[in-house]
Amino acid sequence: MDTFLSAFTATFATANRIDIARWVFRPGMGHLDTVKWWEDTGPRGHVHYGVDLLWYETPAKEMQSIEPGMSVPASPGGTVISVFEDLMAHTVALSYGSTESEMNLLSLYAHVEPLVEAASRPGLGDIIARVAPSAGGAVPAHIHLSLCLVPASLTPEELNWDYLNHSKNVIHLDPARAERPSPQG
Image (cartoon, rainbow, N blue to C red; front, side, top):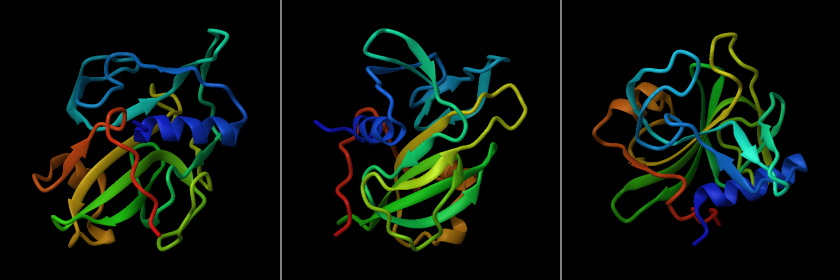
């Protein structure tokens, strides 16, 4: 099965001309983790929905890390429904349309410097952002990827991390296990 994370990994590696054998995760970087992975480890303020990508291993078993300015590609393409501020920089939200249950499937690329605007329609592999630098705190530059279902009635103005992290109307999917969304036609 082609998961959202595996599809993103392939397009990210191609866009940045790097080889990724696998992502390296510390406790706290995974979907549904409840602890911080950075300097002052301890409990998070809420469950972590999605995955944080920072370290990867090359096929030669060398450890590398994501660097500020690296390209962030759309994987797959969709419609940008919102670009909003997050704790470190911005988040780009791509929509893949409504499901039969009137839920809208979104992929979210967080802690980035956006290169797209709402209503744009990037295709698979199109560069939508750059990795943002660290905000000066203990958290190094990284990419946060989320995949979720939100009510189709949710407006772009209502979309933010407070809503995503606390609303009972959001269904969070594990990017490492969820099947890659189909691009919009």
